[in-house]
Image 1 (tube, rainbow, N blue to C red):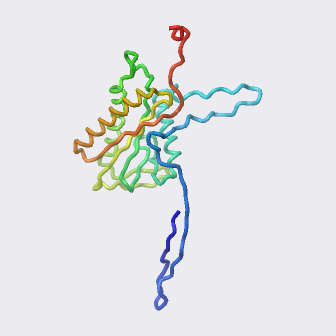
Image 2: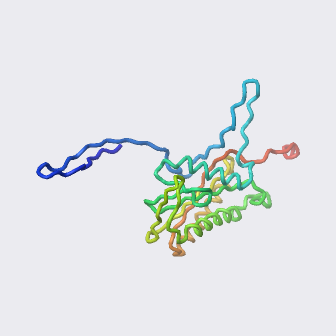
Image 3: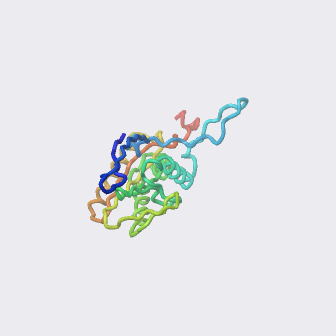
Length: 226
């Protein structure tokens, strides 16, 4: 809630004319840190009364491209009213805060993927490389960039004289193990500290969030018996 006075006009011999205002507004918080919950995709249609309800398929069953586009579009639509403007298209970054000169990017990592579990154990270093590559892609796209086109086709000027910051939201499955989350968080924090100590001119940070449903593959009868 904010209350303020606005000086509308000054007239000779009369003095300034002021109007008092009182306004209030509320909005969802901007990416609630580690507690951020990214919802699952909504069902395409409601089941009819005579049909049994179908369980909605998790976004983690989709390809990396489809999953990445879904999360980016979801974040852009969810947080477009927070005062942080959303960039046009699906290319990184998906949002920009001109007040803090901060760019926002996101990447999804399936902690159950075989590529991150070569020996049956989660390889946080390999998963971390995916997030770091996404961050580096975003850094290249904003390097020297003077303008950013927004969803409403307006253009935001980027002040190159100010320090830039890039925050990458790393989305993992809702059923990711606490051990995998902690290991990934630690390695990404280390990568951010290394980058920020390099004096490259911009700072970075990674933020982990669970969302999009569960991704753990269903166990086969043989696995259950074992």
